[in-house]
Image 1 (cartoon, rainbow, N blue to C red):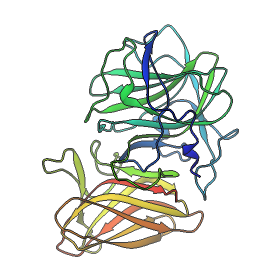
Image 2 (image 1 turned 90 degrees about the horizontal axis):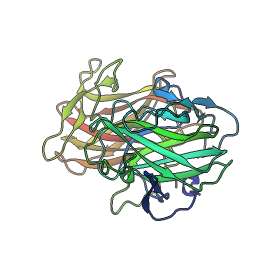
Image 3 (image 1 turned 120 degrees about the horizontal axis):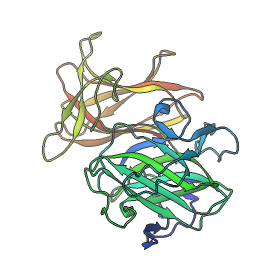
Image 4 (image 1 turned 45 degrees about the horizontal axis):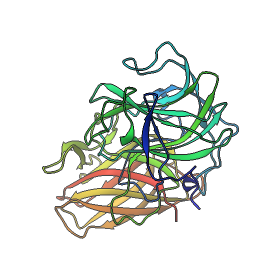
Length: 352
């Protein structure tokens, strides 16, 4: 059974304001998200420069969610002031785990946050998020949580508000920044497997993934080496009525054929079972899709048949690999003369 589902409470959402803080109860998630904005499992150092507070730990960890990979690291809180400089109590010191989901993804209007945590010397946790679009923080508070044991929680971030109750819910297309977990001074929180996502759409049947490996959505940030989206492709605007951006295939200088290579910003461990979901719009009847490891020069390939040309549609492909395999790139290839755009890449270990 997926460990993500063993959440404390699993209550339907409810909220109220107590002492100026929005207190909520956890909600349940079951299906693969419609979109994953960002995740952090602390297993690699790829995004380590964006760990703004907290220190990696290797002992007293929760059981791994993957069927093929152990859990090797989590993040324990360190001392900080409240990042909310406008309404937070800057006279107090807290313990917190904070990371920055560069490059500030835009939300889709129903944003949820899942994570695993362990609380010590407290049963209260504050989850806080910063809005790049609005220029202020919102938070919500979880109370009466179990102490001294790892627990899986999911909260509806549209319930978060400013300390005085203002601010309104997170809105569609609103860009966010730092994701923050606070406890009072003298307490401690450790955090693992953080996922900021939009819940599954109506009709989704696949279970929530065991483990996330990569997410790519191209809406903000720059393309190219040293930027947020390295690889070989162009970032282009969606045609209306769609909004934001997508990745477009370019010519492979080595073969002369069109391709789209998304670099994973580092070497990422694969599970033995891996699934890649994406949206695509192409003139081709089929797309060759591969996971590639440039370090070992290994590749795993499959072909996606395209049912309709010239419209956006969902696609998925599975890759079975040997234990210990890794990947550095996702590559899409199409025949000469054809075109391809992709969006909303999600590489993960399915729960089946």
